[in-house]
Length: 348
Image (tube, rainbow, N blue to C red; front, top):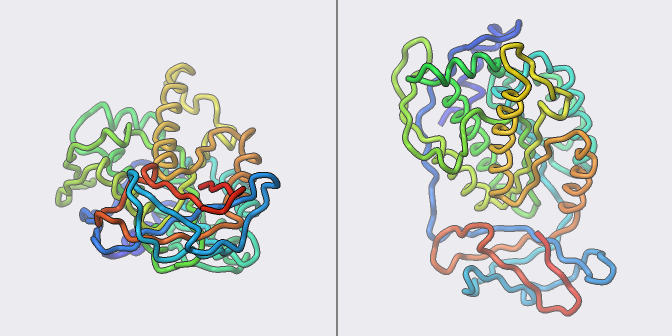
């Protein structure tokens, strides 16, 4: 399937000014391959119960993995400090007018989370055209951040789009964002032996809850083009399944709230209406992170503590791999990992 950045390359020149509604590329529905013999990988931290220090010398025989009470066949359990950090910039749901502050936020977040030896990637789902290439070079990170810009719809455009019925650009943008993020996660499957984190930077979606959006929706891009059938709920489920298969923890950052956009940006919205609008968006971000065991950060005041928590949790860990006894990828909250060594505690 062609990469989204390639599909959007012809749009770059069209967004030199603040964007209005625009034609998104047609994108066929994607299927997530499920291999019954697939290896499931997850990462866990094991620390001393008294000191809180990481335990680095556990053997595979000291780990036990169960799903629904059924013990699983372990393939490996390896201690490592190597990490992959992917910053997914959902520019289809970010504000153009806040681009400068958005870049400052990304510089701060990258400086806190990316460490020496990490492989870092920046990727986008829209006209910023950031492909998600892996690099350990800080200069590559700086260059990628400089390309970031917001291309989201204005609040009144969103309200108008949802009110008129029929083909919806709002729903299609959610579809593009979820499938592009899923693609970025799947691209990291080949990187074994590294803990993987994806930081999803967005204002949130204007459709939800994602878990309930399961009815197929027929959407045509504008101007007229062949219709594409898709389900936002199925897109969400595919992203979560991919994260579980590849042991990616997804954390979400509400960029709009963190760069000071608390008040209504549109005079046609009352403050009460805007709060409902913003809260609904944040709920979609919480769905994304919660389904993979990640954090949702919705306030600038919480950012420093959240970044420290993310960095500490990913610093020292074991990569545990097992074959599901029933051949199906289990839900993350159905997997239990324990160790037999006394005084050791396991955290995810």
